[in-house]
Image 1 (cartoon, rainbow, N blue to C red):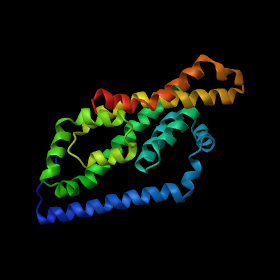
Image 2: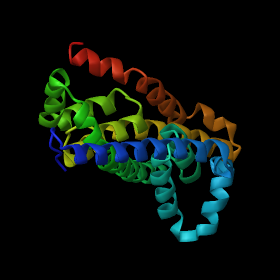
Image 3: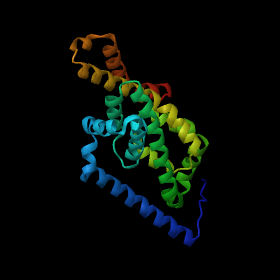
Image 4: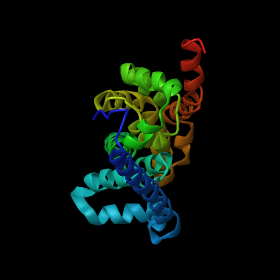
Length: 231
């Protein structure tokens, strides 16, 4: 998926057209989710009823919805919370992780296909060294940015504009989102189970305290990572 840095005039025009399509895609995606009935399904009750109708295919349907949602700029935290609320803390984590991986990969491919050529044509000597550094250290760069909670969806598309190799991006993302995804799904899923059961005595259980502790700890992860890197 490598793109030459220098392009003929015809290649530059083609790159501009692709970039325009990328911008239009992003605008259309945001408008679709914000200003159409699609947003009405982005609640635990509405999505839960829809998935109930899917029967045994509900997990696959949810993974597909998560994948599409990421490409349409639906906030990842919202999709993750819905997965945890509907499927619980454990299966919710599994389905959310797969959905996040497919969604982030699809967004990366969209960014790479439509935007990389134009981005490479804009890179001057000062930025070229950073672009090459990302290619050499792609896995570590992606892993670090995921661990410090760099905005999920912008990063998916943005990394597609760089020279990072797809499999470095894929592996860095897969490993980097595990901790944060598990903490968030465990926290939301646990509280939803208590709410559904109506047994408020469970609020003082070890499981609830542990989920809250993990959730609070998650906010310190970026600072810990940066401190370990000496930044």
